[in-house]
Image (cartoon, rainbow, N blue to C red):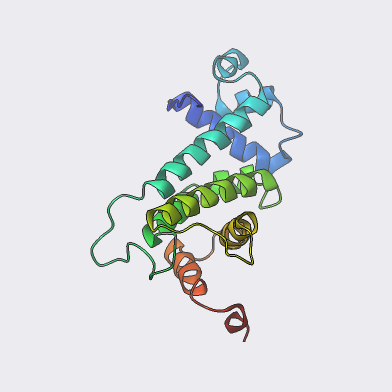
Length: 199
């Protein structure tokens, strides 16, 4: 488990990471660049992170921890909003919406850490969270992914990959639509047969 820190210095380092990733790319940035951009000295940087790779890994781990907590513990939903999908749907609407709102609110970071949607590490971590959520919700309703003609490993992949792909496309497009719009698109898409998605 990554120990969470929430200091002003680490916030400045995170902002420096975002700025430099966008300006020159992760490979080209140095610890000196990060320290200069964050207005700290190198020694201060090293009290928090061992190097730029440790920084990136901790930032990603913290974001994934937050996203996991939000999506697996969505909390109480307003009474006027849907709290779960229709019967047979596994991912509660508010869990999905909470995750999308988190990504939208910290878009600059998610865009930088994913290299504008071209780094699959974030995609894979997001899919892992989605798979875990599917399994938890399936257990609640007494079902498990898979059928006699579709082994569970493939059923899980189809369910998790389709959902993650929509979120990933939204991120690559700059999170143009609102989280509510994407949540509704996903929710609606789950009720349609594949042929019905084609106009």
